[in-house]
Length: 195
Image (cartoon, rainbow, N blue to C red; front, side, top):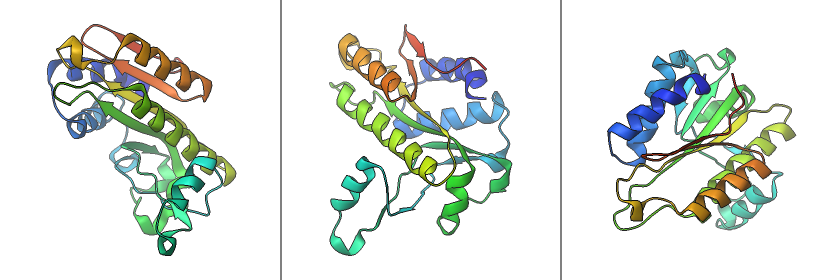
């Protein structure tokens, strides 16, 4: 579904410049329209509380919180695709079912800052976060496809990722492994398996 929608996501993101939230909405729209994902299976910014994390990253993030708020971590993927079993209900109170029915989690990064660019550090943090999220799902008997999507369509070259930053991010995604999608005004990377 994502592979089918990707060419349309690329085209729309190259035509309109906006914020990360705008691009999240573009991805959602393209998944609904071109990926033909049913409304009841597609969520945005879905909070998924995970008790007693097993991944090193989520345990470390949990320890950074005040001691009264420890005991879990709550990833919030930008766009989520669920199995039909979720039945259009991914509220916090259904956290077990939400994690069990998750099929795809997408983290989106966008080049929206003035006089600045996306760096590999923030991309790699999202890669590691979505990989840890998958590890948590696998520890509980399910799994999903994690993807990081980089919308680097700023028209000024000085506001786009550097060649080395992009290569470092893509290499980490392959290593973990996490799906990696990238679009700039002239380039595109798609490491998703062919559908």
